[in-house]
Image (cartoon, rainbow over all chains, first blue to last red; front, top):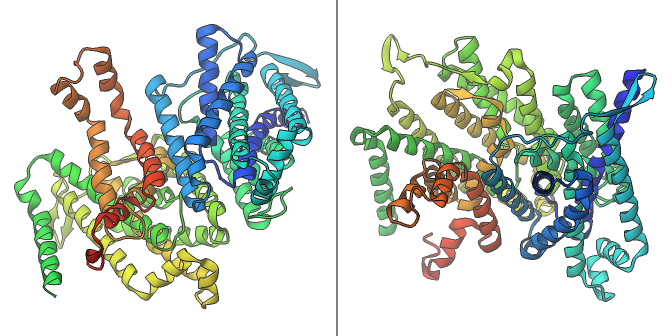
Length: 289
Length: 349
């Protein structure tokens, strides 16, 4: 029972960070209908940013979120304005290829600068845990990152539901043409949405860096995970992505314990294929267009 | 009419030149480059049939490349099965794998198909890492020597030089080009193109789209697995990232996209551009060239930096090229050339 609880808790905690990656992807897809294959690489850039801030200036990874969030927002906005904006009306395949290309450029540029060595960001609390009782313990960095994730998700929810800009983003996601006719600046909303998506991915990178290896190719794994999460939750649904993230986190930690850690990703991908086949609209989605 | 004869004559001349190259060129490096070129052409051409003609963007072709390479190598390594037999076992397995993948993935369209194809290839890669008793896991399989090819006790070749590989590669590349030519000019190819242009319209015209997509996938997968087996035997080493990684899928696809999808010569053009470029980066030729013309000095910081790092930059180059191609010439190099060609020549092209 202790083992079960232990893996459930760590699954939920890591799932919170996954949710953040998934929300970013789903936001971009919702507003632009662009499937961003560079999402994991954007997260990887966030990880290296955190690593730099930590090693050069000694800024704690969790504090550095305050710096990396706006920087990654600008980075995302730049990517949208210069590249993605040009293919908004192209066929889906070309959008996918463009983002794959951008991802390759990011991961290989980082590799040129930092080499492909694994970097580890060791903080004083990297391996500290809190005993909850009954033999169950909670990792401190995972707990902190989960709390930050929850706060960011709540703030994002408030932003999307209550502010004018947030409502304009949601209107653009619902119907781009109608939103434009209502006087919403849809191209600016696209820049903001991509910026936010990148910022969320970068933040996830920052939050995961104390507990994960940092290397240039780390992105592709997370791109795939982000897709699994968003498809599971329903493309374009923020609530779905949150649930999907936690579900994937729990699935991973459960299969690592009860099957083997080598096969945990296979379990996730098989689950993904099953969802694609039997419920392609996802858990919360309405349509698959 | 005279034009056709002229074209055929030039083609034959070119072919003859390719056939006699190993007689006159002894440099193993030059042959190695040609072999890489042939391999790249056959990879790009195999993808072309499914992606370029039938419009199904598979980003999981590493699955077929890897299964072809692994089956041949595994059989040779642990069962002492000679590669030219093992290859066909690989093909048989790939047909089964492709039909299973097709029956799952072809229910999906657009980005969902792309995602499913990636997921399947990743499952393959992770399985190769985890099934250590079968595949040797992350260590990979190293073949120290390839048994000599004999017909009735007479040794045809012992695979000690690069020459036999040159001819196998050449044959493979020509074979894939021929298959593409046949696809483009057959009823099958017209069905593929109808599916690519508009699935629903094709369906309403009575084309069984799932069946034809599966046919396209099987042809493409078999050719890819042949290329994979050839790669395995030529390099003598396979491990999960080099034959089953996501990078492999992306590179196979890019050859075709950069060259021009849905054209016979697109993948050839793509290979002619990509293979020398990435080889020049890998072998530090560019840095040496820059040093030679006095652009950077060999001992300066930039020179040292370039020398150390450009060798790893060929994937970066792929990324930059694909971004440029999508933004500025979405029909690839082939489409770009066709646009440049004057209108009256268009029928000839």
